[in-house]
Image (cartoon, rainbow, N blue to C red; front, side):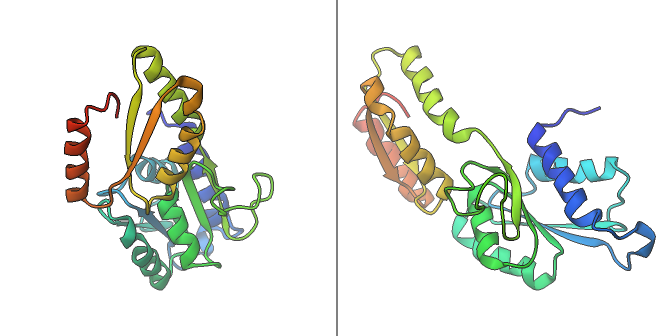
Length: 222
């Protein structure tokens, strides 16, 4: 059996419970359940593919028991809002979103359609859920350890390069996850004697200019 991440398995189970197991037998359904997946990636992400494969392995038939439509914005976070509203207008029965920006867009698009998220770093801090025990509203899902892993990675960076003093962090200010990660990591810098330079880089041309500037300034870590 092909291996999966625990998060993907749990998300798949949530989908089965919320949509396909909603007290309606397969024989009584008049149409497939419509699952709308939303991502800022360039196509279906591994998490979306694993969710689909998990439903198939549990005996649900694509285009018979469920239909999966994917909206992806090719890295454009600002396009997620419009993509989320497209899924709402299409009449999906459930929205599946991966990562923070897509979760935020889905939350703003509907308060009625169930939303399941995966890979969100800080759902409580983002205001997606009220608590882990009682999410509230129409949103639930799986969080990860990224906010804790970010500072840990930087600590390992310092241990690998003991003379490391300056670290450059390019990020997209429209990406809630990147902003949260930057702030979370920055609070730990004093413990390791590091200088932290956050640089907002929304578009590709701005990113390229920032890379050149950082290289000329001889930043020691990226």
